[in-house]
Amino acid sequence: MSIYDRYINHIKTFILDDPDKWTFKSNPEYTYISNQEYTYMLEYVNVNYGIQYLNLIKTKYTDIYNNNKDYLISLCNTNDTYGNPPQYNFNDFTKCSPTNLRYILHSLLILEYMKDNSLDNIDCIEIGGGYGGECFFIMKLAKLYNINISSYTIFDILEASQLQQKYLNKLELNVNCYQLDNFDNLKNNSFLISNYAFSEIPLDIQNEYTTQVINPFVSYGYLCWNNIQVYNFIENSIIEKELEYPKTGKYNYYVTVKPSRENIIIM
Image (cartoon, rainbow, N blue to C red; front, side, top):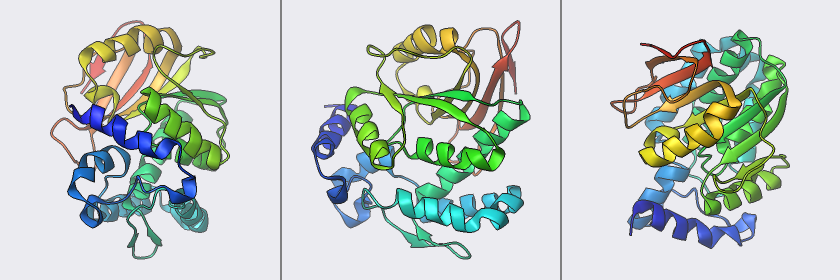
């Protein structure tokens, strides 16, 4: 049985549970080792990376951090309400899951890219949404950039979609959770988001996403890329990449997409 099959079987146990009883974010060091592969997909940032993410937020987004610190803390507290994540005390911040700090940094990078390209009233498409954490932070932090997220759609396997829908409904967010063989109402000129997901799924599934979702509906995007070299996965676009920071893997990059008359990759 593959890791994805075991992952599916694992999250099936939570879909029907009362959210107040969820434990899917629990750290395997404090539960049992067979959970390690699932927390990798659902809640997998260790405390050392959490410290680095927080330091980057403080230095790269100083004004946002200083002016909105209480709001950032409240979002972390909300996201930690469900799933029983491991929490740590972060200096000059709060006790929270380290994964929140990666979500915050990545959300700010994405929203900054949207703002730099004068985008607003944005329809987001996320491929591989975990439990919905990145979606939560992007939608809640967009107001700091005066950006309106018109719609948010997450693509994933069925069981993950069911967990995402239940989780985000609990947080009172209106999100569409679809699968490749079951979706509708996508908008043209959408913004693509994918954090360590699109680049690690099998190539044939990547091609399906490219054919059915990315080329027909996406104009801009921001991806956290891993596992494989960056390649031309979208037509008529400029693809730019920079090293992920902090770097967590050999092929890890931040990859941006914007329209062009031809395919270009800028290293």
